[in-house]
Length: 617
Image (cartoon, rainbow, N blue to C red):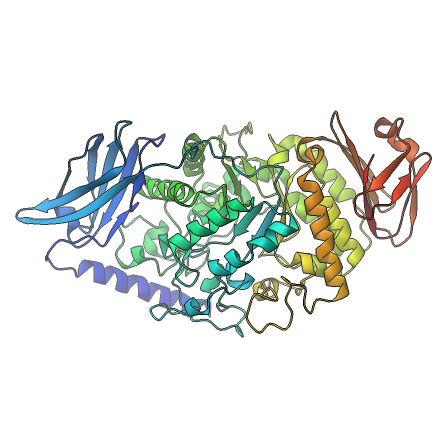
């Protein structure tokens, strides 16, 4: 099967290159000019335009606009491309101007626009530890408009019966249910990628871009995405865009006419990565392993971007800045972070943070070791001198430790306790994003053996750790999956009520079981409570070694103390409170946030089996 895919991929690439070489001299035209527009008053005064069109490389570009000038023109071997470096100084006012591309008596024109920036754009606040993030897969969350389920010109049509097919969820569906997300208490929304993925199959996941500047029409339009961000802000919700730097989809328009032979790694030939992710920070790593990790393709349908090419690097950086500015984003989630060229990532994070000093960006480094994950965080002093400006990372080590504790009936919380103790490896552990699940993992309720007590323990822990918490859509209604092997379709079922005719509607509660309604109420209560608790957002932490299936820790500041006690045991456990005297000195009782019950703490804390308490002292 893989051999057949490789042959098909090679044939597509060969056809694309033949098509590019067969272009005959004709009238000059512009098929793509990216970024399609920009803004005046940006921190970085330089802007590189990629211009693509028939024989456009033969032309001479000129423009006349106050405060804007062409600083350099780069021509490449492919005559269908031209790269223009513009210098836009502070005197450049918002407005339109023509860029003319001349050759002899022939001229192609593009009317370019500089927009005015939104007030406060540069100083926008990114997501932080006071937030709680709700993650959705747009295709599987809600279908707000059946009219865009399939698009005639795009190969992958809607088919809800196919677990790997498109199901019709869209931006309109998210817009219609912003109130639901806000009512649960969430303040950030992370949709998986929304840009065009015109791939023949499995395009719903969004991680194989075919156009970096266009929202996939099966989700909506660019304006729809901007409207989503605007309407979400009115409800106190920021939007975190999911971006992919390391690879694209084979159906990307570049692949029909490559800008340069080295635009993708291995000259457009499929060479798979072997996923040796530690190689780029291993003092003993072979150079070949380092090279393969960052240049190998994820799949034969996903060409790997060559970020050592400065024009590729610049394109990706500008594209992410463009979406932040255009849509008014509060942050980025960066897929497969370490798979990108390390030097590129240094420049990428520096430039984005120079432009938006208060923005937050979270990278995905899927590894169980905090030594590996912390390598990428801003402020880390690495043995090899590597420097990063990335503010945040997904806390896979801590999340996996808890998932392991939930899955293993004989395992207590010792691995969770010890993993948190490694926080000294991170420059800023409180800015990490901790999650109970995501689109690549088995559903947490299933991992916990569908044990509601363990489910509550996990969420009480998630919402009180010194982290930014993230919940995967459907966790609040106990959605389940297989736990055997990798089964993406199983982790990505449709959210009930998101489609007309659904028998169960989780948005209204119709058809939910009593336990599902209880879980939804539990999540709402926890997330809303956390929203108003500075001690959880910014307070200090003290924890105690896990014993007898329990784990106890405190969040505290000068104004408040909160005691969290988890009991995984199937038996009630009484914990002598003398052990916690450093935190409990003078404290006689605490009220549980979850149940409202008062607990006497004078001599011991009595924990029911399979339970969590969050005590305000």
